[in-house]
Length: 207
Image (cartoon, rainbow, N blue to C red; front, top):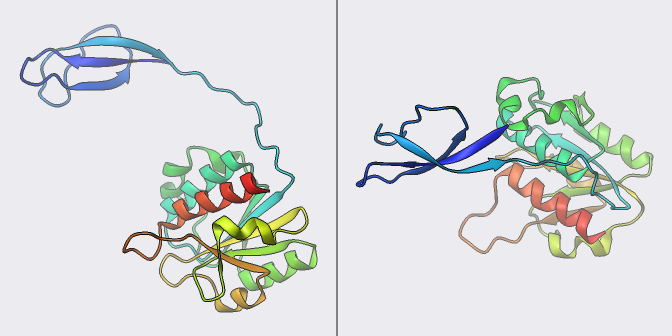
């Protein structure tokens, strides 16, 4: 599908904007004046896999509230080559309209399943040889920039938690390692989907 950049022809506006190419009749969305095409853009994509990490990463969403965050995490997880996503507790399904809005179809490309008890699931995965890595800022946690020093084996279960209250305390107790994202500003944390993206890619790139 081709798209073009358009330029408003009104001298006092000159608004530039992208839009799907069509034969004629484009108007400026800002002022309504005629707009003319500037440049044609042909989007290119590739399906070639680029994740050469030795790690197999599964992700557990521990009672995430926002369907939009779930969808965003699915899209990032697909890009990072995550093996599967586990949805625990109140975490919305990727079938939710809000999740589909941000996942852009990633729920159809990455395996997922529902689990009602995150703690039990974490214990089951540890018994199967997974290293339990939890993203949470608590005393004793290591910064994400140092977490690669503690990675062992080839299988990881990465847990991210509720936007307000964080990870289940009992999961923190059994975690093999807890990691956090250092914050340089006044806020104590990032949006959970953003934090997940930084964390999963750092683990992959540092492995």
